[in-house]
Amino acid sequence: MSAASHARRPESAGVAPPAATLQPAERLLRRLLLGTALFLGLAQAWASRHAMISDGASYLDIADAIAAGNWSAAANAYWSPLYPWLLAAALAALRPAPYWEFAVVHLVNFAIYLGALAAFDFLWRGLLASRLDSDAERHLPGWAWVGTGYLLFLFTSLNMINLGLATPDLLVAALVYLACGLTVRIRSGRAGWGWHLLLGLALGLGYLAKTPMFLLAFVFLGVLLLDARSVREGRAQGRYAPRIALSLLVFLVVSGPFVTALSRAKGRLTIGDSGRLNYAWWVNGVTPFIHWQGGPSGSGAPLHPTRKILDSPPVYEFASPVAGAYPPWTDPSYWYEGVRPHFNWRGQLRVLRQNGKLYYDIFLYLDSLIVGLGTLLWLQGDRFSGLARQRVLLVPSLAAMAMYCLVAGTGRYLAPFVLVFWMGVLAATRLPEDPGARRIATGLLGAVLTVLAIRMCGSSAEYLLSAARSLAQGEQPGVHPSWAVADGLRQLGVRPGDTVGVIAHPFVHGPYEHPWARLARVRIIAELPSRESENFLPSPEAVKKRVLEAFASTGVTAVVAYRPAAYGATPGWHRIGETDYFAYQFRR
Image (tube, rainbow, N blue to C red; front, side, top):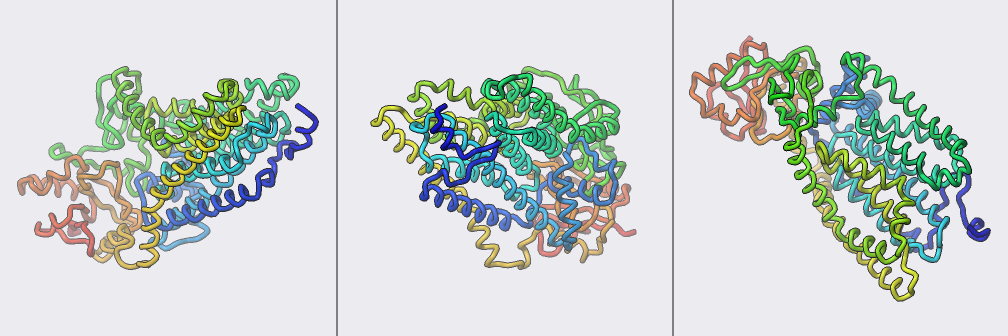
């Protein structure tokens, strides 16, 4: 490397260069995209401020356990602890009324989104600095770097993850981007011990955000250790390896206490049960999510399943020992203790086909990138060596996508790794040497950005319109449907602390879509599940009586059902407020 190129390098001791390495128009574009990211993230968070899904309700239950100091309940083998820790801190600080509790969750999500944006910017600036270590004449134009990077961030964060979902996926994304940004600086050979310490911390927190990050941490550290450039610029592998060992040590120190707590609670060594349960559900065909009573053959038998108190139609009771608004989904690992995940080639091929379709759809959305950057990589001649130089980004992202492909690939799981993959490809891409080909390549990059921008505008329109309608409507009745049910139950005489049963909505595909129970501060302890509930009303009176008697035997105050108008003419059922929910109350 020439002395002139050293003189141009603004990075020192692993510190990223300022945005001044861009041209004024490119800096303006970057600020515009940063402002757009803030605006769109805020709009999506506001539009979904009262939304809640099953996973979020379970995380809130764990946050309650943390706030109460109930550490045994907080050490959950299915739900990771970092996100509920953040929720517990926010709820303790703001002390919202139940009406605003879900809004606080989305406020936390927006704060995490800001952290993910900052972490991505940290990664992006590190890659921008690394361009100065190579042939400056063939760099992609700054506007292509700015536009592609931030548009991809918007797509993966707002489309694939979505701030409206109360899950830790944005938190995982933030920690993945932070780890990748640190890795980019470390591989430059100019990073000190402090960067390695931070890398171990980021990977440890990543595991506390989501279990699969435990395995991916070793991929990050392994590829960094084996990276030829890092070894060469570190002058000796013997001097470089101790720094990776420090990262590993910090990772184990951060993750170790939770692994120990889970292993003691389960009586076996475990880093978490989310992977084994998802494999059993999706590959082995075990009854998914709730009410597993055993089978299929070879999958084991539950040690303590939910209790079936009526066979036909099936009614289940689950008042103890798990706490929470809906115990079967508060801790699935308890109810599925005894399951035996095992390799099944038919099931595995089925899952691979399903996930292959998902991956195809994701990358089809980014077809302009595939065509544009793929063409440039093909034209530059040294495409494989360029990609190899970005192995510290490409290998972990491909490893993560391969891991999820084996079990349950979902867009929000894949989002950060899709972004990191494309940032690695972007960093490996160079303009052709021929001036004519370079002009064609520049036009191709412009077309790529145009397609990405148009698609982002189209996908953003829905929640922008939703946010605008919400602002115009204000907090009018009906804007918070979960609260309408919770308040309607209160008016019928159901009090906080009461227990209720549910006849689930037949079109609900998730295990628990009753966020009103969380707001009403009641516990669902018995259920006629969604697979059977549509047959309840048409059943003979003797069958309906038998079902209600089964519910009554559990001590519930009321049974809640959702089916628009269908229960209105049925004796004993009362509409809950102005909602489409109905309640059958027992006299005590």
